[in-house]
Picture 1: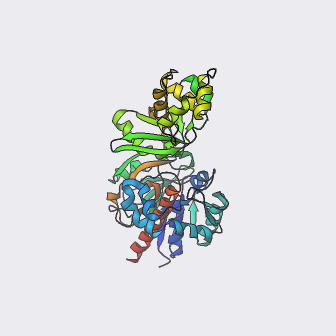
Picture 2: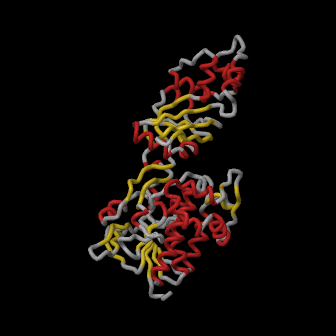
Picture 3: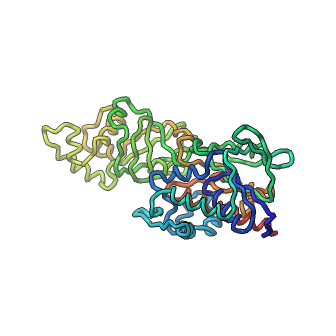
Length: 409
């Protein structure tokens, strides 16, 4: 590759940085622009409670986590999959291990050591960083316009560009969706950015939330109904002052959004004892001691935690059925109404983005040859568990390889 070739990478998250690495490794002069004071901020924040970088699930089922976008992401995931990402981490001095759930973590369990080693590698490759530079769009000559920290505008031209500006979740670390307007102005179709992997709002009573805020509902099954049927997950959602958060709620983001679009709300059905049949529960409930209060009875007979009993009371207006058949059925199917999702700036990730119909197989914009798009800017979504970061890395690699091929053509 001629050393006179240049690449502009816009966005300093995982997709942008891995694209910069491959481009610079091919002998291209690379400059990364980011509007925050430093790059990798969302990457570091995502790893604050444990850097789940990918998942060990077999690729045949791994790809299904991307829903309708799976066929368009397959080539990128095949080109740089979980084993490739683990080898890349090892190359930076961070070995990885597989947790009991199949999730993959760096040995340090944190993002910071990995990012530091990565930035050293990028520096050694000659990658240049321009921080506090916000992309403003294209000028009349299709050259990039930026605003610097002092508000001064400047333009940048290069042989190829990789966009990796993220979605609209976690705006404080850089992903604010500000690019959408300029892309649409340029005639590029962008599906609306919407919250994914996000909590829901529930109109709890004051008594319930004062008593149980922060309490997990341990090992429950939750079902959300959408137009294509019931979707059920299992886990430990957490009661918050405004609703519910946690992995099983995030995993139901798609059917919850669909139900809210259709009905203005979503009913979530909780099975508080998923490993027990209703007949077995009724049998155990029948062993009530004469002096037991309702709370003591439910705790002793079927092992319900106080927050679960509180949920039953909340759902029934504190009028629990005394009939054992009805009470057993309620424990297996207690319904809570979610009235909205939390706002997009409270989401872990976003759905929506640049539609794949605007791109060729190498993730190049059909309307702007030499311009590629990667990461969460693309119209896909996935649950937590390593799938989000993996697709960001994979599409960043795919976009860089596409840009290199474009320059060689």
